[in-house]
Image (cartoon, rainbow over all chains, first blue to last red; front, side):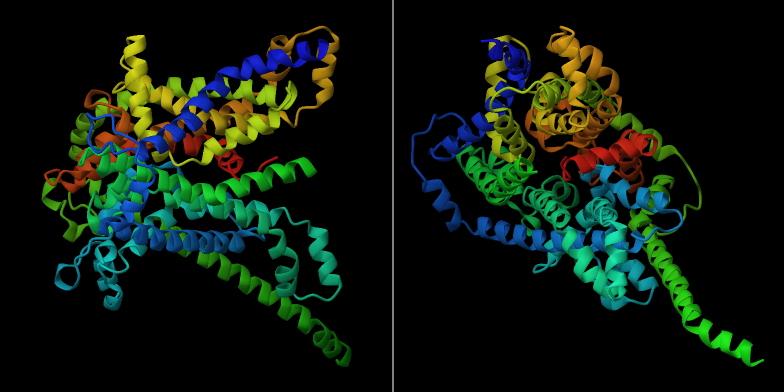
Length: 295
Length: 296
């Protein structure tokens, strides 16, 4: 009884939050799945249960295929680009450089600004006009005599989504840099020194000592970038709006709700977005919890 | 003579190594500076364009400095954006404070006043940090409408509902930050307070809160920034009269009729509050960022 009296007040204090998370996170996720399994294709009817019909039916729609393909291209370019650029910036700064805090502040500041605000300028920078009509980055390339680099950016029919990833890389690579920098600094100096004494060159020290120790940081960065990428919404709204040429699942869902007034379809798309994130975040969290217990 | 030559011969490899180190250092610095220029290109365009008069604000001359500097675009942008900024302040200031209070209570209990199953609760909270909010949006709108009718307040469409959503979905990250901060406080302090007969709230008030300053700063900044910059919740949950800055800005920027100079001035105006926070309190901003990734 005394044991219960010891922990009960704590539980009571957290109860409002537990209830809120239970209802708003888990309850609503479940509710969303049930809406996705009905035929509520307008806002008036209650809809009846149709099982997974919406989930399979979505794949018959051309637009869904396009938006999934776009999401994949975006994710690969964005995650890869931010990871490589962030790592490279950290690598350049790792050994200490004059004015480090200034560099860090500049690479990181885009994180503090909304995609909606930066989208205003990126939309202009990535204007698709070329040749005589070149503006934005295309005209900068022209000034620099690099006309070959001019392209349609996000209006390119095949690789437009790769262009869309550029502002996202710009926004997030500073964050990745900060993560890696913390990772680099976490490698004990005596470990590197010991390897050097054993006759390792700088490259070998890096390859066999530093890189393996950066693995946990890399995993964290992958998870964070990945889940941002799969739900990307604001950036695309700001740069191109609802155009099909840059459609992704989150935009498709938005138009399903507000333009087609089809809750069941919106909920189905939303469910797919949740599932795509859950398949890698849940194993990560479980792994993390286990690791926490062991240490 | 020969002694001197000997000395030179010995010194040479060391010199070369030092020289190489110097070259490498300059190369690194040069590369970093190039990236600074690349990172600042969008800022340059924003600033330069926002100070141009209408006659110069066309994309063709956007790389040029203004021939005539004027703040007229800023005045117009401010007039258009002001209601949104007021709404954002009404949302983000109370919202981030409530988030911090909740987070500190949860973090305290989950680290120092644990109950059976506390770890499971914490892990279940963490998943809430990663869910794509699209997955709750449709039922959330419904819930807000129902709750608002039941309680007779306008939750759906208004600022209170938007604040509620941000506070609830902010619980996981705020709890995480506070928990990781409180873990570093020695258990002996809590035990001593318990032995002295202090209860849970008393211990929280007199032992934990006095040292919680940095964690409060981190959480308030984090929540303020994400509430200020949010777009998704705002488009789903608010009506035009309570649109925050981001939605207003998107409407201004999306309109073909609004000149570039005003769009860019509005974009800067919308970013000033979070930029000021970032410049003044960057240290705490960083810690919030890291909390999402590096645990413990």
